[in-house]
Length: 520
Image: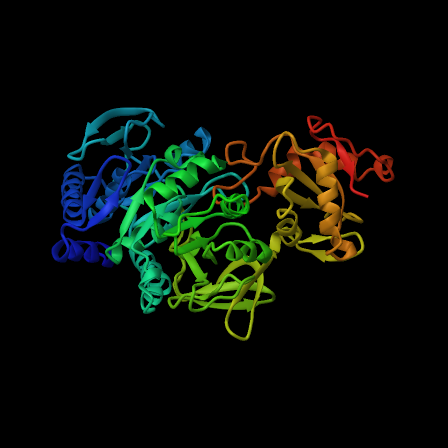
């Protein structure tokens, strides 16, 4: 039995009545959790299943199914609910899934031949028609599919050892180090799952780590947290839920942190129970973290990737530097090669259907960055996203985008300008009431702090937000640049055409999406 399950079983022996999982209307003690894991694992083994998908909203049942599949030796493939129907079918076909573990009263996501009722209420087993391969994939405990920047999901194969290593390293960095401080008010004893459990970061850091340490996991459906899909957020609903459940820790993306800061500025503060917020996903400007800290929001930025079983570096109270993504966790090594971050020590087993990786190999992450004298890692952008202006200047769009995202009028932005004389931006306004003049005014203010070659001179107002649903955003919040560039190809051509080179067309009519506006 793996180290995470062994720890959970030990907690069930020593503290059987301690709460392990809390939901909206029910909870499980550690003893009850182990009982359900045993019941479901035994039943799954009796079905002679080697691999399966996992489909469902965040719930106690999802976690039980995940752990039981691990106990049963099943290669498990969590299915993100924000994937499109075509993406889900691609995952099912590529992984050759013979069945799906379905949690809750969920709609069918594929043609099934039979639905079986498991020993655990509201966990079902759907036998799929398309695939018949029931064998487990050798040495692969979990396959996490990331939609990436192309939109076609790619399966990252992870071993039990890889998942164990990152779990234990995070337990050391976040919990044990913090709880070793004599001030017990900083103790972290409950974690609330805010991101989808199908997201590897939340699955590992938000479930495996706290359960390994005998803590409590609060798991609620997205709607009760004000979260739908992967990009719709009702901040009042989320704040109300946080005050109701009083968690000690969260994992957030930059957009959520930005909402916390804005709410706090208006007097709507987070509950005092929250002692640690891990920040991941897209790059976050240091000034936003500084603003959050000034408002008492204990946020710490980290860095990771699915190919390393999630987190590889993280800031924490005992080792923290704003602007960095922290120091490497104990289980990995990080080096810089030709300006690119490379990681060794917990590399994935390989992409599904491709050559297996060697664990001692260095992984080229594709992320640009550097390491300072104290071992803190700094991310400066993506190698493949680098823009080279017609004047030969190398420009990281992520750097400029991080600055522009500080504008209250801007919800999302993508910087363009490869092989062009100046940079421009495709902008998603923060609301329908925002005018082009407001956006232009705020961009001008940002431009004052940027070198001339990085200043935004024109912008395109996007027709809709960038989301996973419209294939313009990845599941972890990164821009699908090629898709956005293609979607606004005509407007980009017009933007850089000679006819528009000297136009002055700054308008407040925000409904005219795709119209080019001058900033200067």
